[in-house]
Length: 397
Image (cartoon, helix red, strand yellow):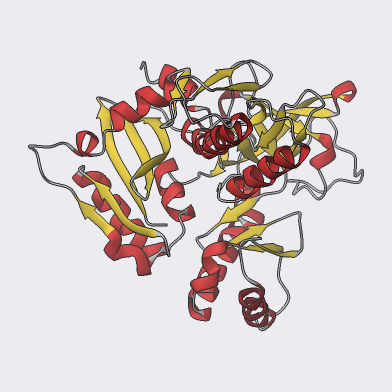
């Protein structure tokens, strides 16, 4: 599957970061140029209070922002001062990383398991194991494991990303050394910084998106902004030299980049409640405070007299579009899908298996859990960035 990443100003003060796969808009993020996201930033946080009934701590970071820290996820935190007690207490100062942005009324979430991310590897401070992307083949894992074992004892945990499957040993080793330098900076120098200060800022979101793109499928990175072009090119030369030739400055002023790829139409579709399918059927997507509900309707579909076959065809088409809409709208948490009723148990199981296969392609962790007794399909998708609808509101769209 060939993909193109596009970075352009959708309007004054708003950047659009879009991904097209085989010509179809699959991801879209709106980034306000005036504000900066704190997602991925590492701070020296101060525990302000612990709420035992929800098993969470509230940690203060830069600017007096309080963040939510689940106590069950605190395993081996890095404190700025030695502690006699293992239990987390109010007043403790420790490293935390923002793992999820604030969404609506919910505070940002932080973790004590710091992740330093590269194109091929992720260094982690608490999960002290060697892990591999599930998308890597067994022969790739064996080759990578043989290389990593030669590096000696690891100072922390290490996750090998999908992109590592096509990398050379030298590239992996160079990136590993860069990540280790960041880790030593945190534990030896940044540990002495002022409480609540940010000690390591994450890359801009669009660079993180590029870094996470699969090299073998990413064919081009397009931007019509020279400043962005220079920044992306410099980033690629430093961290992804193999992909440096993929960035291109689009200079046709007669046809703007956003018009060429119909990004404004894609945005409008991504914010619309109703999504029409080619068959004439349609989806109704309704986000609520607790979950997202998706209803599949036959609409204008006319597919012959065999009713159950017609329904099966509609549901499969809907499943494909739902998988795309989850990424396009950045829907997360619990998603309930009310497909058109199918009487046969075998057809229901087939649809569930089909959806599971589709969600494997999602770069964000997503799963089709099960079918409820009422026939609703339960999906989950990891929360990280804000949904497209909330991004649009913040950008005044």
